[in-house]
Image 1 (tube, rainbow, N blue to C red):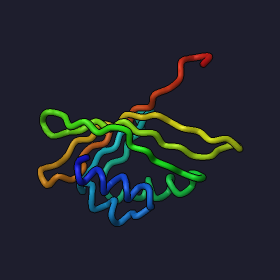
Image 2 (image 1 turned 60 degrees about the vertical axis):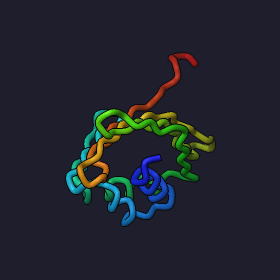
Image 3 (image 1 turned 60 degrees about the horizontal axis):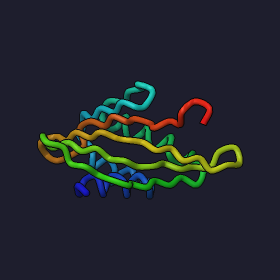
Length: 118
């Protein structure tokens, strides 16, 4: 796995927001699964620091990292948490771009959803 991605995911798991900030570019741009956007390191770290600790029994499991030509990466992972008395697991695909210093410059998040009625 790309070293910055390994540090980023570990920081996310452990809620180490300073370490996470070191992994992202100052002008990082995140586009979420609902086309929601967060721009800038401070805003991005604040967003994650607000959301992630509120997810009961949060777990992040990276299944695969694929390097892309041109230096980006695609990551398949699941995020799991407890909600409403049940465990919920969300399969996702994340597309990462990096700046010239190797920091995360862009994150695009895609959710895998079950078929209707499944």
